[in-house]
Length: 361
Image (cartoon, rainbow, N blue to C red; front, side, top):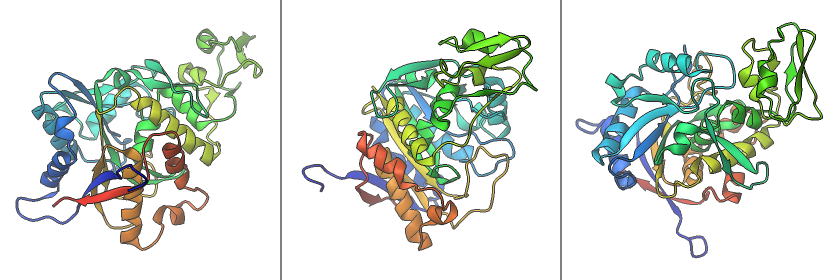
């Protein structure tokens, strides 16, 4: 107990298997033990948030696990769809067409997961809902439209290291993952975008999308008036030549706090309609956005679930460190204090770091 509040429950199953009790069956048992069968009602649309993995990456959650979760949601009569938002960086998932091809390439077809793949922020990342949050860094956040309009969310997160946040779990999967492309820019960068004159062709598309009118085409090149720029990132998303640069050099503490605030916005209005599952397996040092996967930092730990994303991520960290006998992510990313995202998420009311661990066989 903390005061009069019950600790959040985190349900956990380890990697031990036996005949009739393999990891896929244990995933279903975990789903039921966490009470997820009661979250969703008949005909409700449920966004199953998952990272499809970049092309060449092999560490993402295997589709066979997503299938078991989808089937459990369907048992309740709800209508699940697998989803993620487009990436800010240029790669195999920066627009819906390429994103879906990448998902299919990595095994996320209807035949394998029993649900359609819908890219949450549309073809080019411009389909989002502005959600008022009134928090420390954002008055409002831009949440990918399909997720914002869904009746509920089931977040499946590959728990692993991350070069900018120390680790990536439920909070990052929902916060960064469900921010639209310009929302991702807001989280990643604290400075204004810059035009590369060697690449810009002066097409003017960025100027037409610039709400504050900060961009003008002068001669044959776009120029940004930094005194007017709001740092929204729409120009970065819009530029067909990729001539407007992303600043990846943001402060890691600030970035983690911004991700937590985006997670708050992604969950707004969905109280009692959200579940989280962390797959603490194939614990690689970096994000699945890379086109390769490094060796795992340690042996697989298991799978954990909770309706409290803060408690879930804290428990996942504790389980990892207990098995490893050390602070794995601090050791791997020495300049990143991973606790920042948990502390800020708790501060803004996203959840609680204290929890009760319930083991599921």
